[in-house]
Length: 158
Image 1 (cartoon, rainbow, N blue to C red):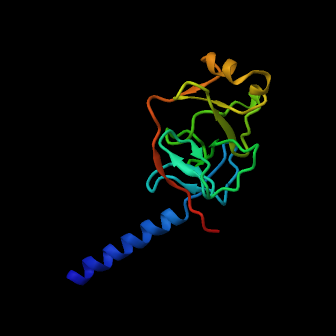
Image 2: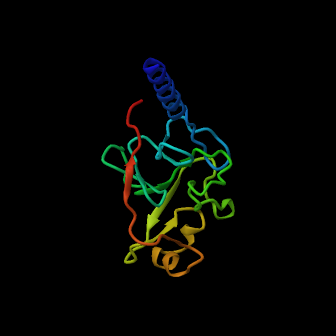
Image 3: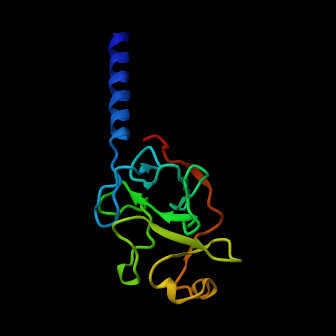
């Protein structure tokens, strides 16, 4: 009887491992992102590229493991394990194609100067304004309550 319980625990562990290993990430337009890694281990989750840090506000942050050039943004709206992007675990910003947001890829995000919890999407709309102008109009910036924290780092293998 004890062996039966152990057998079922092993099967459950294998099934859980396989579900995590096969979690797919999607961009907002439904494109599968093969090289992104889910930030969470259960349920739907934001996904970040290899070597990016997963932050608690669903942003992905560049780390020393990413070969970022001088034009690379420090923060990115990554992908999500929910193909429909209807989960609260998916990033809910930088999704406006009319402003030039990239729905078939990651989207660069900049931090507002002087205001800790404000960020803005680096899209076609933002090119018409200075950072101060983007950050002073509430329809242009993303505000996060409090400081964001590190949730983990995306897998660097591959």
